[in-house]
Image (cartoon, rainbow, N blue to C red; front, side, top):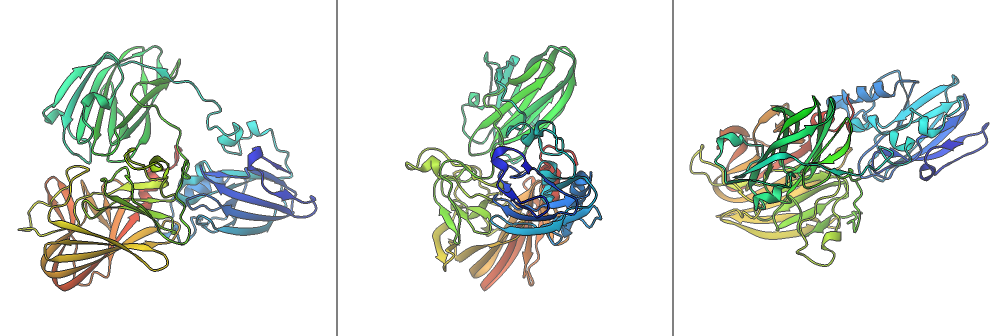
Length: 556
């Protein structure tokens, strides 16, 4: 018989002398629907594996005790990971499925080992193996699931990752002060070198971005003290939209820097009883202003020190009114968080999505999996900005794609705020191509006209090729990317310390250059257009970065 959470069981097993016949489904939240099952030595096993999630998964059986080793080996496959289906060439790998894209299924047939033991199965795709696994018990009794260390914690605790839902206590930062700065940044600035816009004290003792009285393009430094009752290690969870940093006793404990939607990172520090000095840096470039800080440790379950609380990680499927993608692209024309009010969301059947910002004619965001949840704007516009659903969200520099520079070192025109419109550009709308209804965007700049067609590329890590055709005559520059750092890695360019990689195909005589200008790096292409010219730019996800930053709270 099969053991696991009641709602996980979906298959059936025939008489023990016959076949173990099961459905195992990859579900949202990095879970298998069946977390353990029993088989006799040599018994025939027939598994029908389905991927019901919005991200890719596989299923790999290993020898006894080899789950973690195999999962770690998959992380080291590098560029060969996709062609190998994220499965390392190890003797400890027994049976496996290929990587299954959302909606795929695969039949896996084998005979259970003749030697009794507990044989793990695991998803080895991009670090999932630390939380997404199960076990086949061959001729060994299964313990009560609440004590079974061979299944994930969420299965042992009956559906909660912690087994409880502790109440959040309201903390207070003593001797609490705040300082506000105006500016637009992609990374945390050195506030000590900036002129304050305003400063003050707040008796609430809660770090609140609302104290700034601004909605975008500002930064804040909160300072004060927290009471430490007992000696020990204290954990801090820092969530923000956009960037934040937490210092305790002048030591950096949590670094949550960068422009991003609400993202949580964690850190810990050993503290002695008494007063501990706290400094919290925060900046908001555009979109929603969110800041959450929680503390736990000896005698402290969960203490709130900022305006918001850390919310449980949302699964890939949105709630409310999810916009489903079937055989054709879907367009979302309401307000999208991370873009201007003229953002145009496009969801593709390949499970890759983008937001085109018609204020600057630039791709503002890319993400995988689920597209958008339309619930916020069900009754019309004006109810705020909707965050993209899905995962691996990349916020991309929104500066205009083309410019006619007076010299090689002239500054690139920048989108200073969310509502900034590119000067001298005219957006000419978009048309939908063929049965798949994929949009081509049109715009013009001076005597140049541009068609801009994003083409989704399927795979376990789908990506976008941006096909740009520019017509006109004369010299014009193209901005492929901008950031604090741009480094070339073989045929791709890594942008900042982020998921974003860009590259090109069919460049012919065009040569990308990296220049330093206005305090940042820019990846540019100079075009001498005589009638028309084309650019094919690739937007890819940096797998090495994802492996480093998205191992789901586990150490590699």
